[in-house]
Length: 468
Length: 150
Image (cartoon, rainbow over all chains, first blue to last red; front, side, top):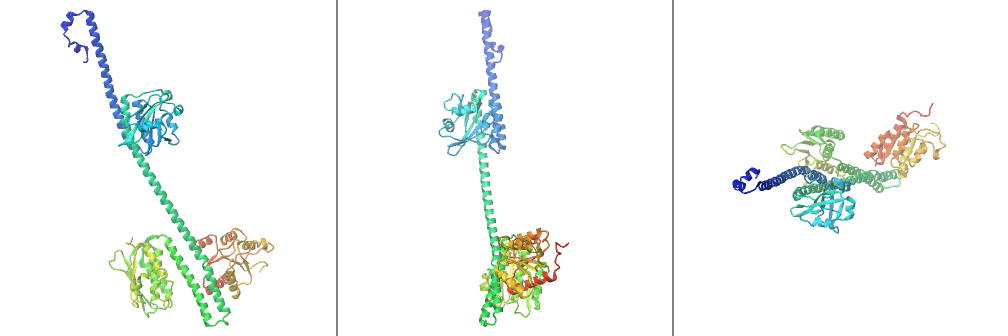
């Protein structure tokens, strides 16, 4: 029914006109006209209701999009207030986040005086014993306080401080769990402003979005906290290791310096005794003194070797491309110089270029090759061979000599520190050379092993990678 | 040699090491005048003519044999004090010590020590080293000029 003309068409025009006076016609016309206006009004209200519905829907869509980008609690509340304001007319929004057991609530707020209240840090409120918070915690739907000054549930001291007037809270639900509450309202001069049922619907719908976003952020913060804790632990452990390393260095320093002095004295004064009292000392006495001297000197060498080994352990391998051929030839040249008159045949096959710590690998080959020289000293014609094992992957290098060899039954002792498989009077040495080679090879992630037979020479194989 | 001048200032706190070094210097007739300082303070007092050496006429030794581990003021601090004073800055100093640790070697050379010797454990080697030191610094080496000469 949109205009009077079609309305009039429903009545029997002839009958009415013929039966009524002009005043009656006017009265009826007025009634019809008035109905049309109120219908139009109701239509307008319905239109507005539809439009508000549309506005609210768009608002919630907009909010949902913004909440996807939120990374902090504040980034959730600000866009929420930005939507609440045009739709509901409020200027403040807040959220309570309940603890797992509901005993405490953390308050976040944006806009209005409440934001100043929580500006510095998020206050944690105790729920138990506060009737207002308890009501919010227990609620399944909106909790509305029309005027905080008059409502019996509110804490009048806080109301006085914050100047609350209207307070609206809806629960924030995630599945069946109550994780907090979303709130809005008026303060001070804003006076009382009760929300319409539509607005409450809208506000409740909003709480679903907000609840999801807050929960997501809580998870993000938890993850960040765990990461920070892990990093803290790693840093603490690293500090521990560094401290341990430093202690070891200090220990090595002390060993190198302080232990040497008494050794020097033992050696020196034995020597002086031998010199000054040669007349009164018989052969066995002189022999004892020689043993004392030998012991002191030996210990000095062992200290040097141990220090070198420990220094090796503590340093990192500085890997660079190294031409093993050149490196081995350099070592051979140095050894040949020391070997002097001896007849040694060196057979050096093609050797690969590898990525390794040049200094450490040179030390390793120096040890292996000087061993080869040492253990071939009783051969009239020593033959020492260095080469690459054909088709080996990872590349394996071998060092072979035709010297005294060792008993393969004791091969597992070969690389132990101070372990020897020969008598000191046959071959000198402290037994740290192969331990050094072993450490260097291990440091490069490689492997070392040996084959031999007594009197049949020895072959040492090593790789510089491929083992983890 | 001028009065108050010594050939060797030997800075050594260990009595055994002191005996061994002096014995060697004496036996091999390496030096005639050796001044002994048992710690860093005595060494500096001697060099700068103060404390119990206040009445000494200033004159630099030909060589300072410096142990590193000394009580009170240690070897490196003595070295630093020697190098910082223009009167003694050019005096030849040899560190003679048990340690061969890199940090000691580096620290000494950074303070411009002239040479660094690790005392050998073997006494024969030690004697030979001291003999060579004496021969080098007292005979072969050209000493720096007297800083107070006009």
